[in-house]
Length: 360
Image (cartoon, rainbow, N blue to C red):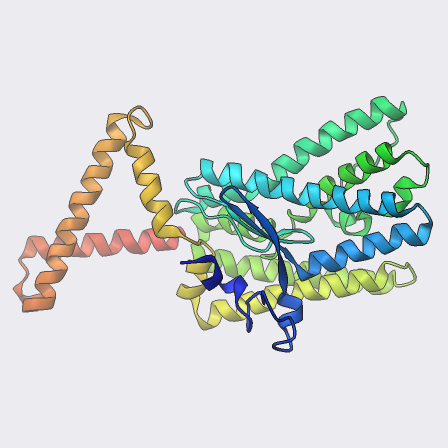
């Protein structure tokens, strides 16, 4: 599939308009602009990111810190977001997948990385961005402590508080642009790490919670529980924001939590309407990832002779099942021997068990 054919390059429901943001009522909010091609990676900047960067820029200018400080804040934000996606790219490759198309929004990529089949590869691929942000934030923290001779630097232990602490222009008011940039980069990495722990499919947390639940509940219930967890959290935070509406960030919080609530509601409706289609979308490029995973497992020294033997047995079993199904298609179920019926029944039971565990 070419990149122009993918959903985020199409206008309409769920697509990202590439050329005309006014082609439909929702196209402006799905619009993205090219950000360049860097080796195998194609980058686009989403409407919501552009809006967030504009607000950051205007905030710094309003505080009087100057154009250079405003530009440095924008660079710090984009750098943390790109670092987050590079983390996904590294860990997606470790999980037998890839991550080479970035549609960057204010909280990370709008496209999840691909990975090998199963909850564990999903968990690895989705946590990569947060782990890289954590490493960057830790390095920045110690540099700031050494440079300022102070340990009074926020760490935001509470992930919900991160929403209210996006990088702002006040960090540049001291006149030290280097420290302002470093502090803003530190805060943005922390914000991305904590926000992506929350159970929403707009963020990494939704996929991570699904991966944790799937082995026990099956893929369908894992997504169902994740959607309900997101809606309950968002509803509670909307209520808290209303109570704290006197704060200047109160209205922003209400809008943000309302959008997150809506995203979980839409996902839940899609799950009820077309569960197989939605579950396949949540693990993109599965066939390619499966083939790559098998090749890696067969590589000399990767998993050893036992794994190679098991893969060969699985392939022989699948060939036998295909032969039995072809026989049923041509001559009917009555043409099968007792042994063939037994093998078909066992294969069906194993497939149902894999689906219950969220595996393809």
